[in-house]
Length: 609
Image (cartoon, rainbow, N blue to C red; front, side, top):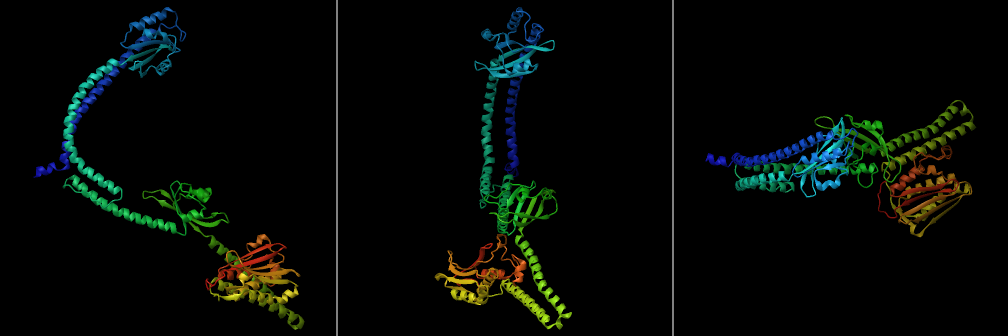
């Protein structure tokens, strides 16, 4: 049983194959012998041609005159012809050439017509340059392969000509053909015996290998449910078991890899921050959608581009990329479609290899434009509030000190000072009230009380509220309400405040005899559009974009003298936004202004500001 089990092992099979390889090796020796013989015959043939060419070169050298490329006497040509004819080589042509490559004589009578013409073959050109080892194979006119040898003729250290020999190799190949016939006969016999044994042995080896190949192909195509059959406990059987185990582990690893890959792709796609990965040379190899938007990339993602060019890094920032430590930089990147550049914080983190070194860089892009703008607005807001409160407080303090210093004893002066203190106090109260109102709007604490409202009545009430100031400045005010905008759902009190702020501003900046027009209509989008138009002094174009900012004034001194806090338009904008609408301003200097705000016409909107 042990003997039989041995023959079932892969080791025994390899021994049998080894015996067969010995038999085949014997045939290989024959091939080597034939090849060596062919090389030997070819080398001997070539050496013989070279020796004859060398001898003829020596004999020909003294036939040339001292001047390069000329013959001393005409008799020398006859002497050379006799020498060439006496040096007979079966199936060969011998030519004697002068220094210019012209044929002086030839051993083939049929080639006498070529005497006096130049031989332009490469071996001849090399020989005339003084190169001794020149040989090549050519195919003659009779379709027979020939060996060509060329030797320079030297006289006095100068090349005065060349010897050209072209010998056909017909006899050599005939000899080789006979040797090959003998070798092929023996080889065919050996191959026949080897083939019979090879079929038997090959079937034993190839059957399980073919089966394993089919299963490997199935695994490569993603079909992991197929199992490799195990034939016995030999080496191939053990390999089959290992293959099945590998297939199972590979299936698990690929499943985990795909799951992790999907998780990573989902995370990268839905990240609010941009992520850009580069290789060790700084070329982008991965970029998520958010990064492409932040970098202003349209169409295909710009992978393959250098990171420093993509981010517009200067030389110092680009040189810091390969460093070991993470670092960050603030960049200004232009958004898609133009506009003001976004402020982006880019954090560069190197990717380290296990064996050391840096494999690339991860750049995380965070859009901090809003954060920076909010921080700037906060600083500006604190500065403006401080300034707005400081002015009345300084006035109150100075007048109080004046009263304390003796002005209180003068009833007329004291009453005027107390009036100033009262006005400044009321101004501070208005400022604080407006700030509290804005705070409630920002924190969504001011709830909207949406109700159906008569728009015409609301506009008339606003006009009546300012009738005294209107008569004083002799300003003409008119209201016009289109039929489709006669009724709307809105917070009457809040919109009254918006209209009050707009009409108040129109009155302040419209000179005597001017006009104010209040109009309500339904625009093309179906929104309720209410506008306040005046014929006042207007606003410069450079200030229109910032007119709705808090504490922003076109003419700070004049606005403050008129009692404004700089918050009216900001409050109006927040109230309109709370209703789900928008507000805009059109104005030209000395041509008047028009403020328009739109509101949804129905009651389907949020109830909190």
